[in-house]
Length: 220
Image (cartoon, rainbow, N blue to C red; front, side, top):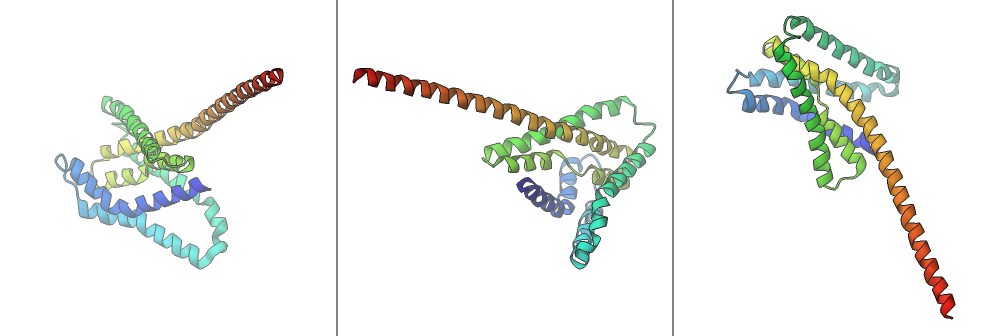
């Protein structure tokens, strides 16, 4: 529950900052290589990300539990929309998907994703946050809205610019599942080792206490 609260809070903040940060970061990092339509990116991100959230909050506030049945199927609709975006990118780049340049992009995308997990986990550890907060920050930094990246790349740049986001869309679902289940397995192993270590110390101290009591009894 706590992890869910942390995740929603971070996602809300990143969503609200997205219209401003996307054109700013693109201009800063890629402005010297390509023309970045900052104003158009800002308006498009606002329409694609922020406006639907505001509408969703309003609909939920007005109709309440009446739309629970629709809310349950929304994740499926979202996944279908992402698959359609991936399909559109693949269709537009069918001649460039299996090339040496694309082969180079795949490990870069994987490294980018893994670095996000590492930085999120590392900084949350340094800040001394609790485990649910560490998990929330790790996944929120590592996993990003690749469908938004692909959409903006297709609209404002060449179709090939959407390939990294498409690869990321597939890869981060794989890495996220592995990280989640792998993290739980590792945590179980650590807990078991800690239990054995604690049990060992307890047995050691109990033996010491018993020895001291025995010596005390002999001394009397």
